[in-house]
Length: 347
Ligand code: IPM
Ligand code: MN
Image (tube, rainbow, N blue to C red):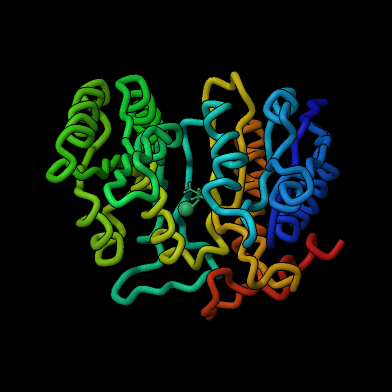
């Protein structure tokens, strides 16, 4: 029997609530399947930990996490700790330290979820975003000169290495080829005259290795419009770190709401653990009320099992998800799901 060690960082806000639901499902699935076992280890890191210890995670936190097969993360960030500190010292630190350079975000409208667009068929919303996750606009390279002075200058550099750009684009081509779907690259070479011209060039170069994959290339502004006007154009999509961040929130709105959006931070070489998380954030305004939608966290748990090669269980997960109770109308950032899981979530 396979045994997987899972590090759980429930984190802040609604993180613990939604992760608890995901863990109930994972435990049930492991109980039903004689092929694998899951062993969970909890780490209390996050903003509360910061308030007590002055840091977001243990000093040797990254070393501790190395021993795990996967990391299951809730949400990071809470009022009182500046976001750029809480995120750079926990979520982004893990993504970068473990070279989780692929961020996989499905934008698929599940059966019960609300279709917000008119003149669009439900099945037209079925995209797989592959977001560069290690560099680009999130390189953290820059400076703040003459801080606080009249002539202060702030530099925030986008870093696009050949290695980093090629590997994400190649990963996307491999995925599109495996799935028999088209691949769309989203960039902005008309304005970003170095980084995105380079991105487009690499996309073009790598595409020659995959003549069987149909390709398209859009500017990010046009892509944002087309995702609304004609979402069926987008099947597998590859884009940079920041564009991927923005467009996958738009994607979440298309696919039933941010409470349904899951993400996998993958180190494809499996040299380090990969991390699975709902992408909605900590939603402090509804934390502790038990109304945060756990579906994104359950979906990310299914991505985790997928990555651990437990394929038939993933199908079970998704079936369960598509049949779940679902409140279509919600005005809050995190959709309310008062009956999160008809069966497994109550145990
Ligand atoms: C996400 C989040 C993060 C990101 C933030 C919290 C740093 O928005 O995972 O999409 O921008 O990557
Ligand atoms: Mn985001």
